Amino acid sequence: MSCRVVVVDDAADLREMLTMVLDLRGGGDFEVVGEAGDGREAVQVVEQTQPDLVLMDIAMPVMDGLEAVPLVRRVSPDSTVVMLSGFPARTAEAGALEAGAHAYLEKGGRLAATLVPSLTDILAGQS
Image 1 (cartoon, rainbow, N blue to C red):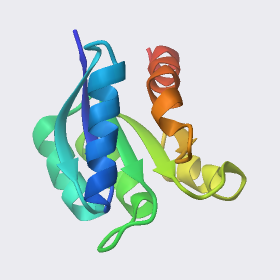
Image 2: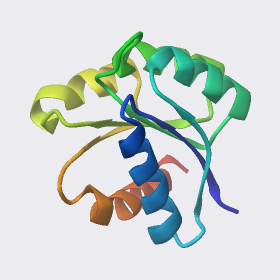
Image 3: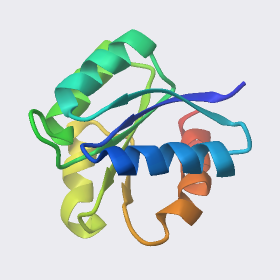
Image 4: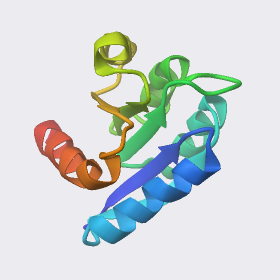
């Protein structure tokens, strides 16, 4: 059974790249069931789709990821929330975890190569 994923980022090209990486490198283990461009939209999409995993950016317009995490957790308590950000982990990870995220991953040059193994490890730790 594949992991149902919602991808949340204000950059449409990054949402597309994350979806392609999950499709191509995920070996059929990940299925993107929804996308959102800001935190408010994320809450609605997550409530509708009840995904296993939410990949969410921190810095977004309308409502940022840190504001959205508790609301996402409330509408879909069984979803694992992983924050993605260009901010270094040392500056943003604690705030993401404090807001209710299960894990934090840095966006970076190696994200395409490390995303699927990182998510697999995170999900294994959640079960």
